[in-house]
Image (tube, rainbow, N blue to C red; front, side):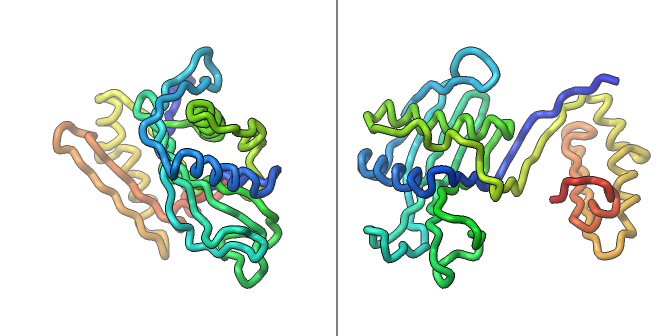
Length: 243
């Protein structure tokens, strides 16, 4: 049986890079010093992951205070985090934040940083739009290379080129599937899939399930069935995926 392929929508998470320790973070800091703290709307060409040719991206860069303390050995008074916002074709967006992971002593280590992690660099995915998961590290790697080429900064091609560390996490990944009008009406009718799932989850103890039906322009315009962890665990007990 054939089916229509789904497409990525929004993704959040953290890509952790540890092969070169915290060197990529300090290199990004040097880049920002080189560009006087930021740039706006630089156009670059990024190689496509699985196709020939390139894609045009527009990149802006800024920074903010991290709220984290430097180590005693660091030669800076404060740690910054670096915001990089890239906009590609077809409403593709890659907003990230480059953060330090410095192997702090126990009293200074943030709760979000595993105790067994040494120096590393974290790339926080803020709200990536319309990129497949394997495209995200590829595009970010090339964004950094191409921006540095454009502004005349000596960037090491080894940075952000390795596989992300095993402590990397994806906390949100949404996909969507477009159906034609007739099929959409079947999905949302009284005996359709949405109502059946809602009824199946209605008496799950401890759950919170919301069905939002919107037919204002056309039947099936926007229907959402929001299931919490309890409902998903009950309805899909063998699934390896959890919200």
